[in-house]
Image (cartoon, rainbow over all chains, first blue to last red):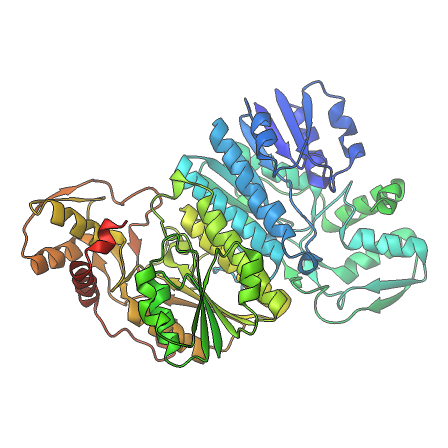
Amino acid sequence: MRYLVTGCSGFIGSALTERLLSHADEVVGYDNFSTGREEFLLAARAHTRFRLVRADVLDAATLGESMRGVDFVYHLAANADVRFGPEHPRTDLEQNTIATHTVLEAMRQNGVRRIAFTSSGSVYGEASIVPTPEDAPFPIQTSLYGASKVAGEGLIGAYCAAFGLQAFIFRLVSILGERYTHGHIADFYRQLRREPRALHVLGNGRQRKSYLYVQDCIDAMLVAVERARDAVNIFNVGCESSCEVRESLGWICAALGLSPRIEYGGGDRGWVGDNPIIVLDTSRIRALGWKPRLTIREGVLATLDYLKANPAVLDAR
Amino acid sequence: MRYLVTGCSGFIGSALTERLLSHADEVVGYDNFSTGREEFLLAARAHTRFRLVRADVLDAATLGESMRGVDFVYHLAANADVRFGPEHPRTDLEQNTIATHTVLEAMRQNGVRRIAFTSSGSVYGEASIVPTPEDAPFPIQTSLYGASKVAGEGLIGAYCAAFGLQAFIFRLVSILGERYTHGHIADFYRQLRREPRALHVLGNGRQRKSYLYVQDCIDAMLVAVERARDAVNIFNVGCESSCEVRESLGWICAALGLSPRIEYGGGDRGWVGDNPIIVLDTSRIRALGWKPRLTIREGVLATLDYLKANPAVLDAR
C-alpha cells in the first residue's frame, strides 16, 4: 500500500507516518512546515520508503502530482489552533475546509479512493448528551474550528456519495503525548519553568475532557481502517474516562515537585468557543476491538516527560 | 429597518424583496444575475426604497460597502442547482460555503448583527427519522449541495458564538410557486409543450417531498424573525403533508388536459445525491403560529399557471 499523509510533520502526523512506515510500500509525507517541525521527521526520513513533499495542501497542482500511484490518503493537515480562531476568522475556512476540498479533488482526479480524516469532538458544539455518541442530535457549531471540521466531514460524505470514495472520519478528543507542544500541559510547564511559584489557569479549571495518548489514537485509526466496511465510517476517538484541567494540574505539579499558587481566570471555559466538557461515547470504535493502553494520567505524564527532555520545542513556538 | 437581500433577483429572493418593501425603510438588493432574472425585479424597482447592487457575493469589497447602515441580512444567494453538483464539484463550495463566509465577514466588519439564511432539507442526507426534526441524529452528507449548506450553517453558528450575531436558519423543502423555473414542474411542462404525448420522469416517480408554496415560505421566515429569540434559531420549513412526483404529475396532466405516455428512468431517485424522501417535521415553526395557506396541489398548480403565462422563462434557461 502507498499512503499519502498530509500534515506529516505535525504532532499526530509524524507519529502516524512512522507507524505506517513499519508496513507500507511507500509513504508520501506532505507538509508546508507552517506548524510542523523538521525534527519530528528525523525517524521517518531514515526510511527509504519515505518521500517528503514540501508544499501547501492548497497548492492543487503539487498535491495532485504527489498523489499519483497513492492508494490511501491520511488527511491530517489543518489549522489546529482552536483558541485564536476569532482573531483570524478566515484561517479555518481556508486551511481546513477549502484544503479538505482540495485534497478530495486531487484524489478524484487521480483515482485515489480511500481517505482517513482527523475531525474533532468540537463538531458536537455544546452537546446535549454526554458522553456524546456519533449520532448525537444535529449540533449547532460554537467555534470556527468546529465549523471548519464539520464542513470537511460534509465534503467527504458528499464525495463518497458522488464519486464512490470510502472514508474514515475520526472525531478526536484532545490528543496528548510526545511532540505535543500545545494545550494546557505545555502552557503550564512553560509558565512553571519561568515562575515555579505561580500558575495562571484559563477558566475555572473544571473544563473536563477525555484526553487520549497519541499512540492509542493512531491504534484506533489503524484498527478502523482495517476493520470498518461502510462507505462513510465515523468514529469518536477518546478515553472512556475524563479528567478536569485542575486534576491534570495536580499530576503535573506533583511530578515537578512544585506547589505553585494557582490563579484561575474565571468562567466555565478557557476561551470563546471552548466547550467546557468534551467527553465522547467511544463504544463504536471499541466494538471493533480497540481500547487505549494508557490512562489519561499516564498520557499527561508522558507529555510532561517529553517537554522536560525537549524544552526547545517550547521556546520555538 | 434596513435590509440587505443577497440573491434578490432569484425565485425566492425577488418575492422576499417585494414583501420586505411593504414595511422596510430600505431594501438593498444584491445580485450578480448569474441565475436571477431582471424581470423578477420589476415590481421591486418601482419602489423608491429599493436600491440594487449588481455584484457577486464573493466580491468582499462591494459587499462590505453595500452593508453600511444595514440592520439585517437575508442571505439567499446560492448555487441552487443540486442535481449537477458532481459535474462542477467546486461550485457549491465557492458559491454557498465561501460566499456565506464572505457575507458573515462583511457583517462583522460593518457591525451588522442579524442574519437569515436559506439552508435546505438536504442537510439531513438520507434521514433515519421521517418526518425529520431539526435535532435529528447528526447526518452524513450525501450531496455537494447539502454539504455546502451544512458548512454555511456551521459558519453562521460559529460567528454567532464568536461575534455575538443572531441568526435564523431555514431548512427549506422544495419551494414552488410563481417564478419557479426549475424542478419537476418546469421539466414536465417543458417536455409536454414539445411533445404532449410522452413524458420522461427521472427515477421511479415515487420520490416524496413536502413541497411548499413560496409565499408560505416567506411567511414562515418573517414570522420566525419576528418571534424567535435565541442566538441561533433553526427551523424546518415545509408542508406537513407530502406528495410523490407521480401524484404531482397527475395534477399537471389533468390541468393541461393531457394523457401522455409516461416513461420512468428507473431507480428510487432522480440523480446521484437526490434524497428520495424529504419530509420535515415542522412543529417548531408551527409552534410560533405559522401555517401554510396553500396545499401542495395548489402550489403545484400555481407554478404551472405561472409557467403557462410566462413561457419565456423556460426558453431562457
